[in-house]
Image (cartoon, rainbow, N blue to C red):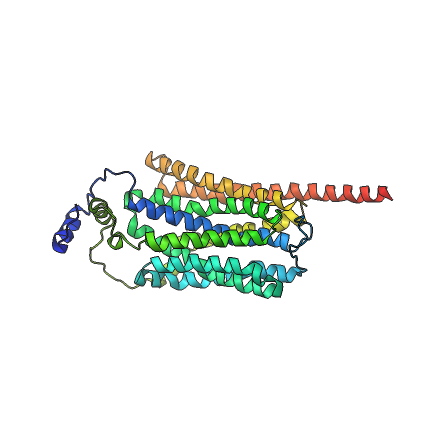
Length: 378
């Protein structure tokens, strides 16, 4: 039941914080919020990697049979600047958005992220004829808008998800990024090779983003207390679990101890390497597959999405496997996480290096055969 008296509600939270009630209903309002977060994560990650696929078609004359689809003779310098401009805008919001979201709530920041990113995607094919710098500006703006996503998701999960469900629902929400990249790689390649050409891929991603934003404005809420349709039982279940209403003691950040911590530097360096590799793959794989391996645009999208499909599947497999190992106490929590990190960083990168090495050798042999065939014709 929902207790309208705030004093009684506060007393209830205090007595149930250690032993939160069991909710009989399996699917609730919190799951709807998680699904919306999953969808925007998939949409924004998909929109992020749309350009790396589309730019191959934008600078290649034979990507579609429609002669009316424009192509551009951009230099490699322009090519690189356009691809990297997204991340110029993506980084700064992450440094300040956390404080703003905590102060004003996540709902409207997330709406801004969805609407702004979608409009920038729609503007790219409209402004591209004026030069690569217009695409760079659109991607920069898209990066600024998408930089709000992670702080908003962190805030929403902290306020909506009980502690006992947080690991699973967090994995579900952030797993949307990998699934979005898989779908976007495949669909972007197909759309770029279609009669409508590469502009279709930008319009499609932008339209999906706008539709999600409209749904979010009416359905999304920053916390259970703001949602009028949530049941009293579910609200009390969530708030008792996360301790809403308990006094928060604000303490100063121990910056000196943080920067002197070797584990912190190990995590920072490892995370930097992981993000570096992931960003490089997202940004450059389509160009590599097109210019080195010589695949068509439709095949390019499917091949580029392959690693991220396995990434999405294995993220769930590894999360359950590591939880199982820790629960059975086969090894300590720290050792289990080091094993997972080692497999990711060592075996994953080794297999990637071996694959690219063999593909480069195959591409060189195929280029040699093509030159021989051309000479034989004369």
